[in-house]
Length: 189
Image (cartoon, rainbow, N blue to C red; front, side):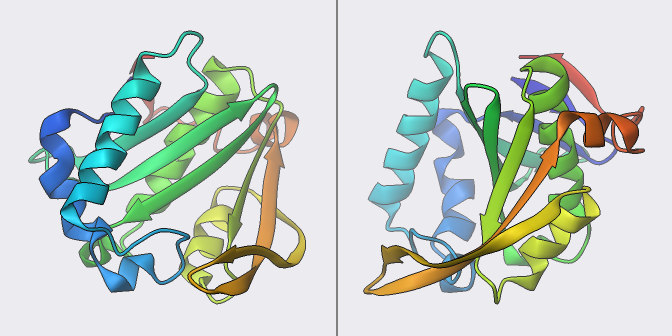
């Protein structure tokens, strides 16, 4: 899978990517709102192995992909899209050095485009912890609507956690300016 946006290349991970991924996957700042991490080197290598196995699944329903800067190929984060029939879940994770620069929103827009235009999704949803205002902002900027507050619905890292649930439907995406963007090229799926 390979997508180009104005500033980014979004592509399947390779085995060699684990060290760049580990620069953010091992960060306690990044893992604060995640159900995983901070990762050990072994955990990051296992994640990369799982993403490569996903690439080989037919039909492919899981996409965990790297996000790199177009200018130099440096991996700055990752996005995920997991199909469940006509529904899909999107997620993203970025190195803190690249927060607040619009990269997550740009990558999420491209992955939403993949989900709706290429994979036939009807609804794409995402969750974030209530305190993760950056993640909520990415969802809102991409036209996702807050559906609700899931109270203590998941248990990890020794306690229960709440989540906000956001989603966007295909017809909402199609009507938005997001769908008419000319700066996204899905080159290969």
